[in-house]
Image: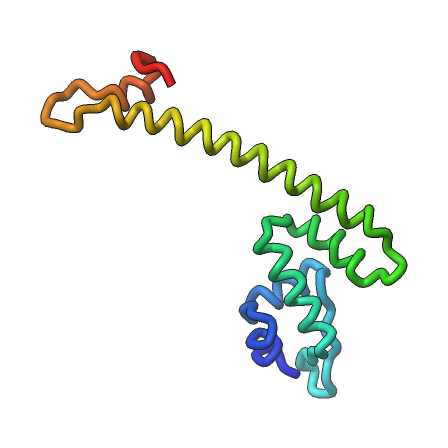
Length: 133
């Protein structure tokens, strides 16, 4: 199938598919006319990549996962280790975001938001920490 059909079936854009080919995540066959020729196996790999990326895996992590996906003799422990590391990273980011949200919430609540020039948000951003988080 051509790249347009592969894009439609995989849910990825043709540009993304070309990018994945450029970085070696996928290699489509070439038809006699030189155009890319995608198989259903390629579409499955593209869907796998799309889902992996949507879960936050980096391109390099996707490369590892795709290698394991193709390896029928893989150990699930290898897959779990990659997923577990990603989960740890997400938990760390969530903790950081929660802390940022809480700090910003305190700053927003402490600001009157009226016509006065005095603003705890500006002071907090400027390092004049009048507000405790």
